[in-house]
Every structure is written in C-alpha cells, then in structure tokens.
Length: 468
Image (cartoon, rainbow, N blue to C red; front, side, top):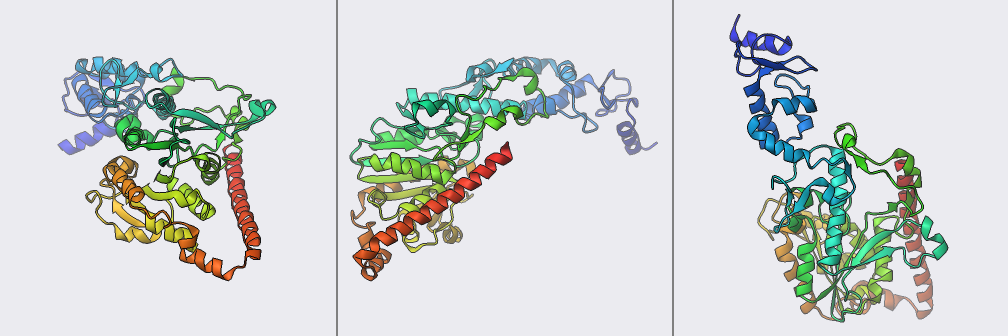
C-alpha cells in the first residue's frame, strides 16, 4: 500500500496501528476515548505544546491529532509533556471553585498594568466563554476600585433623588466624577465609552484582559486631564438595564460552569424577569442627556471638551442635536472621537458645529494623524488615522494627538464663536422670527425632543423584553 494511503487509513480507521503523527508502528499509543485515534506520547506532548503553550488555545479546545474531537480534562492532564505540567498547574489555579471577586481568579495586574498569572507570571490564557465573561466583570470592579482609590474619583448613582420608599425597586447605574468636576472654573472633560460589555473606566474590555490597563482603560486620559487642569466626568451610556436591590441575588459562577464550553451566558434565566430599564437612562442618548442636564449644566467650567469612543460618538451628537443653543452647549470647544460610530447630523446648526470643532481618529494602518478624507462625509468632521487598524485600539493609539487637539480648541477659541448669535443658521432664524414666535419654537423643540426620547425608550423596552 502507498504511504499516502496508509495515512488516510489511519485517519479514518480508529485504532489502526502506528502513531497518527510520526508513523512509528512500534510506539506505545495513547488513544482518545471519543474517537479512538491514537498517537505516541511524545507526539501528543508536542501537539499539546504547540496549541496550548505556543498558540494559547484553551485546554478544553485542544483537538485530536486526526479529527475534530477534543481531549477531555483527564486526557489532557495525562498527555501533556512533563516540561509543561508546571504551567498547566498554574493555569488551573485561574479556574476558581467560585468566581466572585478579581482575586478569586489568581490573576494580578503588574506595574505595567498587564494581567499576570500570580504563579507563572504569564498573561491571560483562555479557558471558556463563561470564565472570560465572569473574569471580565471582576476586572470592571477592579478598575473602578482604582478609579476611586488611585485617581480620587467620586461615584454617583443614577437616577438621582429616588424617593426612599422606591430605592429597593429602582435599578440604577453609576458614573464617576473628579472632586473638582463641578467646581473647576476653567475646563471640564467628558469621557464617553462605546457599547458592549465595557463600563465606566474602560475603552475596551479585551485590551484590559489581553494587553494592559494602559491601552484598555481611561487611566492615561485621567492622568493627562489632571496634569492639564481638567475636571472630569466619566459617563456610562451602555448600562441601560439592571437589577433593582430587591431582586434575588444571582448565585456565583462555579468551577463546573467554567469548564462547560456550552455555557456562554452565566446569568440565571429565572432572574431575567427582574431585570428593569433604568429610569431616565434607558438608552445611550437618554443617559447622556440626563448626565448633561443634571451634572454638566451645573459645572462652573468655561470650557468643555469631549472624548468619545465608538458608540459614544452617537451619544455625543445627541447633545449637539438636542441641546444646541443652550449656554452650556456653547462652552463645548473640542470633540475628539476615536473610531466613532456616529453619522453627521442632518440639521444645519449641529452639522456646522461638529465640522468646526471635531476630529475623528479612525481605525487605519496608516501613521497617526494621516488624513482619511474618505471618512469625512459620513462623520461630518475631519477624519485622521488613529495609527492602529483595530477598532478597540484607537483610543490608546490616538492618545498622543488627542490632548494637543483639545488644548488648541480651548486656548484658541473665540468665546463667541459657538454662540447662537454668531451662527448663520441662528441669525437667519432670529431675523425671520418675531419675539412672539419664540415660545412656540421652544415648545416645538421640547415636543420633538420628548418624542425622540420616547422612541428611544420604547426601543429600549423592546430590547429588555427580548432579553427576558
């Protein structure tokens, strides 16, 4: 029989003689229980080393040498090479019996902000989706702890002023403010993250876990903001549903759940009926306007700058579209988008203002600040390369250019440049409208805003029903 035929026979006939990899017919084989395919122990060890150690595949995802069947936990432990067993033992320590806190996962952040295994001092290594999601939630808690303790930010819970007898049944979200956010007389910086699993303090969860806190969090922005004299408010636009305090508490995720590859969502389906939309924060835009009205408007700063990532860009344009012409909105001097998902406003006033004071640093493989004019039209503003082709990296890669841009907007601004009286569209409206029509126009604007918020709220409610 030809050699190529022998190899095919070995792959399709479980238990056929010889190692599936090296063809040694005299070697002692180890066969998998599920498929029956076998290989010598040296080849199994080399196979596991390549996939598990070098390529960082999860140990539950290591395939057979000849088919798609995967090794069981026991088979993996028996077949891994001696040289790799110490690493595997350290890896197993990151799978806790119960995962409730960051420390449970046997990881730490080192002096460079990189996630490291406490025992092996190596980086994050995938186990399962349930493990990754739970660790990700604990990383958020760790980051927000640092925001309070290292960076001195205060936490506020929304909605505000919940009556005492309604607190138990009211879901709430959190935002963060520097101690001088409302009292700083000069400048205020608003940080608005994107959508998905990220929470206040994060630009990208995957980077916080797989790269570093420097690239995945807002920490560099907080440090630079303090250095340049900004007060800071950190928004939370994508947390629109939560469990009220009175809802039953979810059981912590267990070791067995972490090892079950079929589990992707560890939330108890029975508890989802207790999930509620957060009042006044039922969508990203509604949250942004709520924070704007209840915090930003109270701030004493003369100048406001905004940094918005991804879907945070849409939240930012909602401010321009629904609050343009107000005294506080006239203080916006510069908006730095990082690969924003917004589209250009349709109305003239917001459209002109966005074009005048904004730059969108987009995902691109070109050097930082290289013009990307093909994106200008849909963004409604100048687009430059962020210096990185991956979306989640853009806030970190554009960072060296963001603050010089914000500084230029604040230091060179004409105090009257963005007031309604200087806008051509506002001037036209002022000349064509009598003082008696102003209340009617204001009422119409309020009505349109209420209608838009109502539509977003309905969409959020439908989303909640779908989740339930």
